[in-house]
Length: 595
Image 1: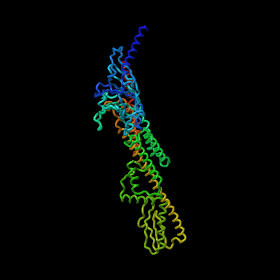
Image 2: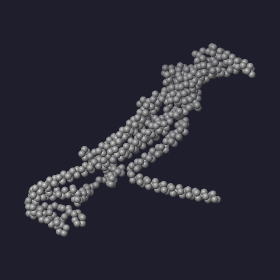
Image 3: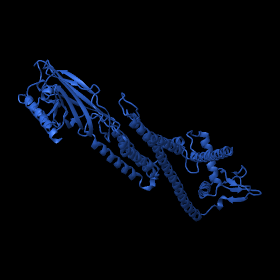
Image 4: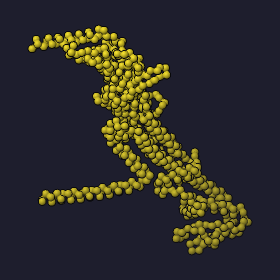
């Protein structure tokens, strides 16, 4: 058997060797293989995308693994297979044959042509198939407007470097574009398609056309990585900035927390800037979101400084103006449903003049009827001034002073016209019957000068003490007003910045053109979009629900008790109904089993 096969093998090798000598001995690699020099050579061009190796956004480069496919007919390499032992095709190195000088125009490779020179498959009818693989590094204009929810269109332009359209007619092999049946998926980018287009361009310098084939690689960024590594940490950091408004101003860490969060956001923004090209054509969406959050955090730091300034003010350094009192102590607490401990909510409607006078009279009645030091000193001060006038003005008319005294029943009221102190130059009489005091005082029995001097000193000391107490009370009241104003500003900033964070986050997510999209021109991979939407929508709904609940609870804490009661009632009702359903199910199951 071996002896019978050996002659056939030797014969086949002989025919191929003879054929190669016949084809290549007189072959000129510089000759364009056409019958007529005026006829163009038909070249079919195709592309197979194997893998997207890298998308360098910073340098705006696309690195891909691509197999080119070139087919043409060479009239100089035709033969009759029957004359050469049935040999129908040959594998010839590309440097031994004429091949078109098709290159990628927008190549960024150091060697410009990144293909590997494989053999050319030549058939007996003159058909030549050349499939060179290569690692192509092409320029790509990166649009970072919607980063990280962006789509990119990277074009690869192929054409003859020296032949015009009258010499080489470049045709698109497949009208659908490039072949992606063997594409290896990328972890960062989703391939949408590789459409191709034949372009015929005329220049002013030359009458002949110049033909090129342009393939557009459409890719979409997978956002899950950036969502969980950039957006979610940014939202959490912004939430920590909001929690800074819940810290008391006396804690000391209120301001440092905001500054630390601001520095953290700066680090995140630098991470985004390192991956983006240094271009001013557009600002990435994620960068815009980070800038908004940084603006919010910076504003919160400024607000914290204002809050601390208000909290540590007192009557010695600052006086509260009327508009601050109206805005921060009346209107905003009423809108935010805030009140001081033990006091009702302030109403923005200011009292009338009559109501103010009535309130002042009530305060005066309480002070005079009380046994406080302030009221007693005021009475002593009035009596001292009266006695001093009696001694210095011996011929003054009768002086009447209304005296508020406490009756036996505990009621307080002024003494009538008969219950007056009549002080004249002669005799002054105070009459009292029943529970009243009868006393006759002569103007000549007034206090002596030494006793009067001692009493004046005592009165001066008491007046000083009461003035200090009054000032301390007023100062304490002003300090408490400033602290309450700081609390109001704190609550207002918490609500405003919470709403700003929620709105900014939702606006950024839903402003992206392909955040929740099911198809684009019929070439989208909908499975990834559906998986992404299913993963992100519950998170968004949960965030919105938590934000709305937190806002509602911030506006009124009393609603928390109502919410707890409602939830407890719901759980009780649900538990009862569930037990009832289980009981009915078991009962019916027993009846069916018995039957």
